[in-house]
Image 1 (cartoon, rainbow, N blue to C red):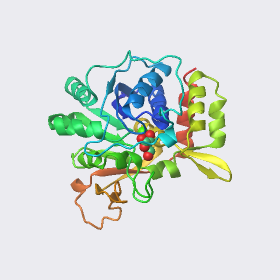
Image 2: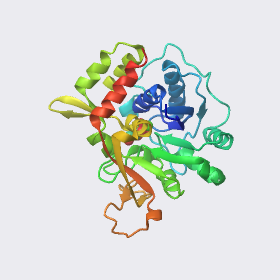
Image 3: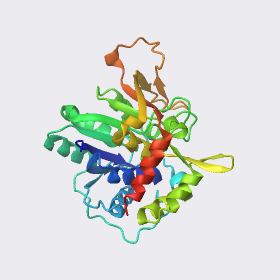
Image 4: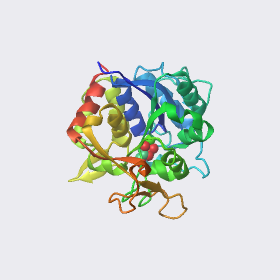
Length: 316
Ligand code: RIB
Ligand code: CA
């Protein structure tokens, strides 16, 4: 078997973060060293316990969870409760809450501890605003060379949620994304458009999840059925899998294509905030080493859906 990829997953556990954690926990290609939590879809008072509870539900209650930032670096937080529900999981109630896996160190400090201790480089999968990752890079630039890559659910240039142009994770903390783009590290952007166009499930596939009949399938079916960020095509739901696609890209990159470009992010305060300017045509004539974003452009949708449903089935 191929060597597993050591990862830290940073998330603002809402509905799609939970789906992404489900896929990561089921993957035999990922070694999840820790999960860190950040304010995003809903406040940290929900994203943190949601993370602890879903990991236990997935049978991975041993994975250390470190609590992170409860607000962006230099902006007031805003939430996506309308989409994810007041508690982030469409008001799903767990039989019991757990804090057993919570570690005492805050997220950035725990990331730093792992980067110092581990011999091999670590991949950071960022499924929420990049606040924790930016704090780590600002506080411990000496550890940057222990990070193999940052794989981020974000980057948008022609669509956005909820503004016309800024995808949520960038919109909430654009300065954090700029810090990552300027870090010199390999940053991969799994954009919103990728999921809208290639990594989505249909209503029929959602119903197939509902028929799998194990506790994880029932959980995923429940929260996705109540999730409101979907499109209707011919009267049927099409649900983009933003965070699930990001984990899938990490675990099964062969299902995706990506290209390296020069990119800047808009950190202004008007409607363009969070816009990811990507020089697709190379008009700026940037040198190869100045290109700072691997933008994920396509996905094999059937392969992605199979990976997701097989992951759910693997829970027995
Ligand atoms: O725009 C979608 C992203 O923002 C997803 O990561 C979702 O969970 C929210 O964090
Ligand atoms: Ca997320």
